[in-house]
Image 1 (cartoon, rainbow, N blue to C red):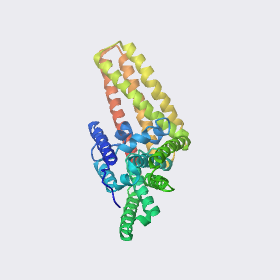
Image 2: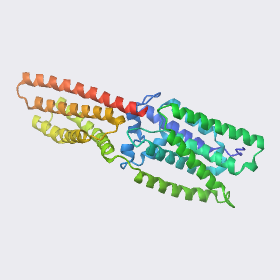
Image 3: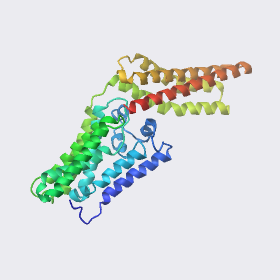
Image 4: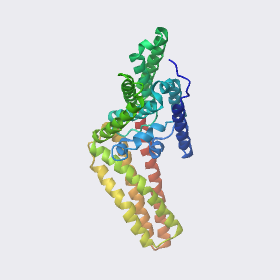
Length: 358
């Protein structure tokens, strides 16, 4: 299978983009070997409670994030090994295959894991490239020497079997995303190859497929059914954490600086902290139809929110106390409550990590 004289610059650019994004991961403080699920979420990983509830862009950004350097290296090595796909389908065709296979793999992952699972990686896109090469081998078999065809098919089959075996045994790998990307890539490869004048119309076809593929991706995001109660509460929990935590830190800084007045501190805590936490606490308690696999997470979230409410009330009590000795005692209570918040946060993160590996 000849690669032609032209260098696969689009493929090199995609590899570079993935490497640069890994650099961004490291710069953000993520672990280079095993970044936490929370770190990936913050950078744009696909997380069903967010992706399926308005943050659709995560389906694209997650394609350029990886769970550690080994994950990145394996995907980029596999992509480089199939670099001939760019000469076979052209730069535009290859880019469309890569993009739509990645999105298709992401949709497949959401269908199979529409719960509290964080997804990231270029695997769906990489499998799409292999699927397109497979379509070329099947549809244009006569163009290859028999022995070369057999060797290439054998390597392709070995790659697929090995990755399927790894996907079945490694809990952190989304086999559904691999399969989804492979099928989309094969379908696009076939679509770019069949029919009279396919080579001349390749770029126009690729652009048309891109439009149709993006439309189908949008339909998929809008129609994937998720548990509105459980996933809605998880999404609300993440929204509250993302918006209230900075306010909580600001309140602590104001207290340490002694500005403004105690009454204004208390009003701020009631309005910006206690109100959203209490609403979330009530939602968590009212959600009883939680799937068995998510119950430990919900227990951790309930514990964390309860600790946050207790810390808020302790701080309010300390600020309302005028006697210096009593106020100092209440601040100690607040400090202990903050310790409970830290422990609750560790427990919630641990449950998210455990679900990522299931």
